[in-house]
Length: 269
Image 1 (cartoon, rainbow, N blue to C red):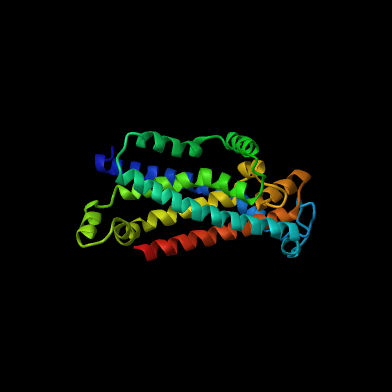
Image 2: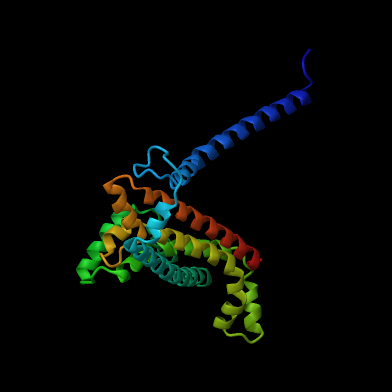
């Protein structure tokens, strides 16, 4: 006996939903199972890290007692903070100027600002290295920050531009009609409305700077080596259980950043 059309439709929906659930579960397992295995083996007592021999915190203690790693982590944090601050200022002001003022070269500037987002990192790193060598600038913290800002601030600019499209331009005019200067109107009226986009762009800039490897490889000196560079050097030597412990700490820091971002998003509403 044939099923009614509505029953066949509901049956088809259940089959489709079942397929989507299985697919979603498979994707989540594919993404997170390696991380779980990595986290489990960060507590493995075996130095070879290929066979479980016992539970230990030795590799976490080794990370916290490794002076070069801690110094590299400090370098990464300082560089990421400076990169975020500069990128937020440049991206926000750039987006506002492109939105507020209409001039002939605006489309070209938008295109040039977006180029670092799609340019291969190795090409950007070599270009920056050639530029610094040409102008005689020694490699160090300054060159690393400049390199990181180059590819980070466009993300802030695009996020703020998208937010500006949803703001009412009459708000600024109303503020100036009430006696506010253009700068005061921007600071008190426009900027609060841009806060969610600025926070999102700033977090993106911080994340990109924190884990950047290729551009840093071409622009850093020995004294300004970052944590990704140190990890890359350790990984080239061979398996090291400290890499597992470092990876787990990175995952924890990422989760904390996501929670912090969600908290800031609630406060900005």
